[in-house]
Amino acid sequence: MINDYIQKNRDKFLKELFELLRIPSISADSNYTGSMAATAEYLSKSFTDLGADRVEIMPTYGHPVVYAEKIVDESLPTILVYGHYDVQPPDPLDLWDSDPFEPVIKKTKIHPKGAIFARGACDDKGQMYMHVKAFEAMMATDKLDCNVKFIIEGEEEVGSENLEDFIRENKEKLAADVILVSDTGMLSMETPSITVGLRGLSYVEVEVVGPNRDLHSGLYGGAVANPINILNKMIASLMDDNNRITIPGFYDDVLELSETERAEMAEAPFSEEEYCKTLDIESTYGEKGYSTMERATIRPTLDVNGIWGGYTGEGAKTVIASKANAKISMRLVPNQDPDKITKMFKDYFESIAPKGVKVKVTPHHGGDPAVTSPGSIEYKAASLAIQDSFGKKPIPIRSGGSIPIVALFEKVLGIKTVLLGFGLDTDAIHSPNEHYGVENYFKGIETIPLFFEHYAKLKQD
Ligand code: BES
Ligand code: MN
Ligand code: MN
Image (cartoon, rainbow, N blue to C red; front, side, top):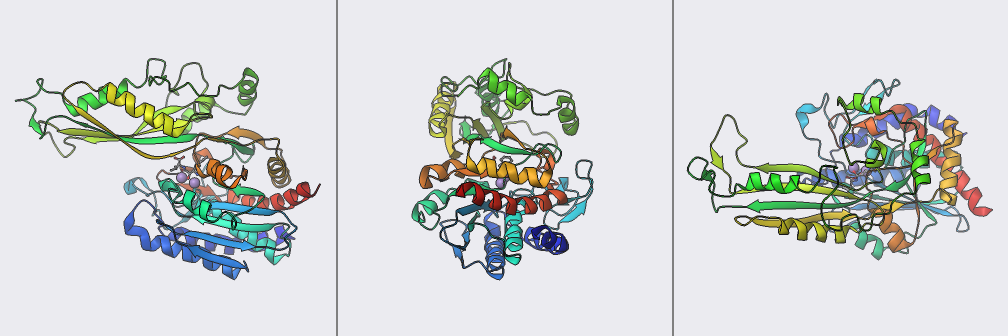
């Protein structure tokens, strides 16, 4: 019944997602505040039109949160769906093959039935909107087996900084049995998986300042500390020859996986060759003693995300810049604490600066790592739902990405999350030409009502 409804409405479901993708909801850029509000409006209207009983656009100090709910029967379990309507900035624009805010469907090797190319197609408008369409299908066919609440935020890509206060202030409203999130991926359509681990994050910006003005590199070169040279040296020293992070104490709280757990992880299908091929690299690179999958999921990392300073215009300019900057992210694993790591970084980075420069470390947002249990009711419900829709039992996997609110939801609301994501690592989220498989979109819409059904049943037993 539900599937008939979804099949009949394929074109409509795509058309509506396209409308949503056309609104450039870039949370990081204040020029788009109007588009953020328009996206919130679009969503709240969708919820109202579909018959949600309480729909609100709730202001925060930043971008608004869209809230909606449908309480069918107080005695039924309540599912709180979380998603985000904001997207990453699309630049560099010249690397896109089509307009990031004018979605088009194109076939790819990995998506032979077509993929939707647009910023936010996968992260997270496409995945979030599957829940709106699943809600529509359940309402239209009178098959809503659980109460449902939606909280769709507009600041995930800038660190969800106002969400903690928001959930603290709205504890009662957000009361639920489980949180359902589609903002992660699966291994492939042939090997469905459920994410059971996310990394945490500590993000810092550093500045190295030398002389009080830019200098002629001939007159002064060799006699003063060049902030760009020094910054590079300092950054390079943060990793040793085995690609281990040298910050004292950095690994102290890392929860090592047992040999059994590592062996289990290694059973997930993964081809190093394919991995390299899709990235046009000859070889992978990383911490000694760990596999590629381990390096990208269960091990902490340190990466420069951006670095700037000095002359970068056309031709040559002989100059020693007065300062140099970099943005650095550290991905964290259970049980590392982002605040502790940020402080460790700051203390160490300041301590390795040579005389002749001043160093400033500014922390940006952070987030706790999260793990969920494959033994839980919600995991079982998700597993059964995927088994029904994909015809295969999913395997649990750890992901390298971060969704800081998952740990926050558990801490503040005491509610566990299930990560029912349908993206693929190759979908180029945050990159030019982001896309989302058309089949992934519809499989998601099909799987969500099955989750509701299985969850309601398992909760009753
Ligand atoms: N949806 C992603 C996180 C993600 C993607 C997790 C794929 C697992 C698989 C989310 O929107 C994101 O980009 N998070 C940020 C962190 C945030 C604090 C800016 C990230 O991981 O960089
Ligand atoms: Mn996301
Ligand atoms: Mn993202």
